[in-house]
Amino acid sequence: QLKFVESGGGLVQPGRSLRLTCATPDGFTLNYSIGWFRQAPGKGREWVACIQYHSDNVIDMEDSAKGRFTISRDREKNAVYLDIDGLKPEDTGLYYCAARLAMCSTDEDQYTYWGQGTQVTVSS
Image (cartoon, rainbow, N blue to C red; front, side, top):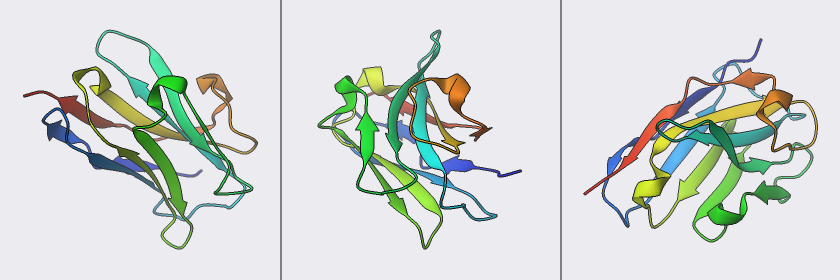
C-alpha cells in the first residue's frame, strides 16, 4: 500500500508564499493522478487541484485557486508540489494529498491513498 507524506505547512503571514510537498517514500507509480484537498476549520474537505497521471502538463484546478495556486510533479523525486502565492487567511486549513489510479476527480471518495495532511495557517 502506498504511503504519502505531506510537508511544507506552517504559520505564515498574509501575502507570503508556501510550497507544499506530497512525497511517497516508497516511490510513485506513474499511473496515479495526485490531488490536493483542503479542510478549513469547521468545514468539510474540498478539492483544490489535481495533476493527471498520464501527463504532468494536464492539471485541473478549482476556480478560486486559479492564479495563486500551482500544482507540479517531479517524477525523479517522486513528489508533487502545491505552490501557493499571495496567501490569504481563508487559505488556512489542513492540506492533504491523495492518489487515484485514474484520471483526476474532484470527488474525495474517488481517491484511494491519502496522506496525514499538513497544516497551513495564514495569520498576521
